[in-house]
Every structure is written in C-alpha cells, then in structure tokens.
Length: 131
View 1 (cartoon, rainbow, N blue to C red):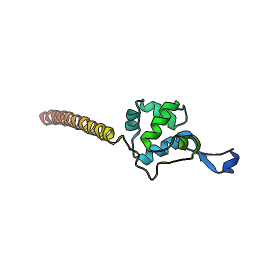
View 2 (tube, rainbow, N blue to C red):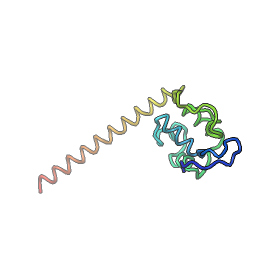
View 3 (cartoon, rainbow, N blue to C red):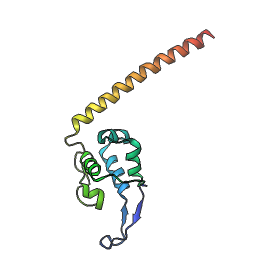
View 4 (cartoon, rainbow, N blue to C red):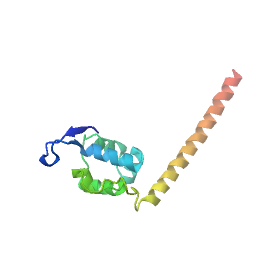
C-alpha cells in the first residue's frame, strides 16, 4: 500500500523507501487533489488510480507521465524517488482552468443534489406532520 519498505538498492544504503504507489498517493495528497478529481483529470476510473496507489497495478508510461504533469512532479520522482517531488511547485501548472471548471461542475452537481434532498425532506416532514 503506501507503506515504506526497506530498499535492497546499494545506493540507498538500506534507507526506507516508498513504493511507487506510495509516491503517487503522497504526490496526490501534496497537490491537494481528491482521488475522484485526479482520476477524472487523468481520464481513468477512481478504482484504477486507487489500485496504482495501493500497488495492486502500475500505470502505463503515458499515464505515469500525465500523472506526473498533473501533480507537478517529475516522472523520475515516481520511478526512482529522484527529481522534482512537487513540494515547492504548483501542482496545477497548465491544468488550473480545467481543474477550476471541473470543481465548478462538482459544486453545481452538489447544489442540485442538495435541492433534491431538501425537497425530499420537506415531503417527509409533511407526511410526519399528517400522522
């Protein structure tokens, strides 16, 4: 999953090393993106992204590169824990407008759901009052 594991790599001298999935998860968290939003921006299912983060499967190279761009890290950060880890960089470079538009859509959808729920609650309340 996101657990660190002991590295067998001679260069890291036994230092704890995060898995590929752990690096993807940590980078997504650093970028402040939910699993669902990140998956939508990548054009994959949430379950697919989750399986990458949990080390149950690995993304193809094109998706790994797209994910790196989305999260503001270098692809080598995912593969070898080297290069730009995205901590000091805006994760949304070039994607800001798309993210803002998707968030507005999410908000609109949530407002519509709220309206429908309020209508249902009102109807339920009316029924209770009649009893």
